[in-house]
Image (tube, helix red, strand yellow):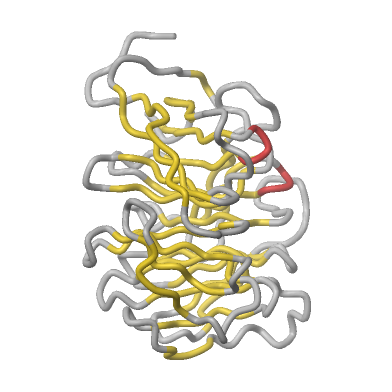
Length: 291
C-alpha cells in the first residue's frame, strides 16, 4: 500500500443490485438522458433490459431481434443503441425507444466473424467492434459502412487472440482486451500497433482473461479481469509505463463480463451472472504496481 495521491480514489464494493431473472448478463451501458438507467444484455431472455439504478425493470427491447445479445453502447449525438449479437453474428442499431433502425453488413469474405464488443469514438463517430472469430477489429462509420478491418491471430505484439472488450480513449486510440493473450493492446484507427499493457498473472497489474474495458474521467483504463474475478484500474503516467492504480474485488463477483462508469459519482458498474455490482470511490486507500 502506498500513500494516496491527490485526485485519486480507491474503489470499494458498495452493493449488489439484483436485476430480476437475469442470467448471464453481459454488456452494460448507462443512459444519461434517462436518469442514468442501466441497459443490460440479457442472454436468458435474448433481449435488452432497461433497468433503473436500483435494478427495477422499466422495459425490454428486441425480444424478437436477438439470439445472444452481447454488448451495447449509446451513440452520444442521437442516443441510438448499437448492439452486438455473437450467436446471430450481427451488429444492429436501435433508436432510444427500441425501434430497429438497421443491421450492419459484415465482410462477406470473413466467414468466421463473431462480433462481440462495441465502442464509439466520440471524436469521429466511428463504431468499433471486436471480432472474436476472425481475431480482428471492425471500424464502421456512423452510417454503418465498413471503413477498416485490422488484426490477425497470434501472440506477438499487434496480434490478437479472441479479442473481446473494446474502448476508444480521448486521443481516438482503440483499447482492446486481447483476452486469450491476457493483455490489453492499443491501436490507432488505422490499425497501427501502439502498446501492450499487462501480462498473464494474478498480481496487481497482471491480467487473466480480460473481457471488458471502459475509460474513466481521468483517462484510466477500467478493466474487467474476468479470470481473476476482479476489476482493475490501469493508468499511464508517461504514456509508456502502465501501472495498476486500484484493484476492485468482492466475494460477490462470480463471472464479470461488462463494465460502465457512472460519471455522476465515479462509481464503477460491473455486470455479472445475475446482477450488476457497484464499486464506489473510497479515498482512504489504494494499491499501486507497474503493469
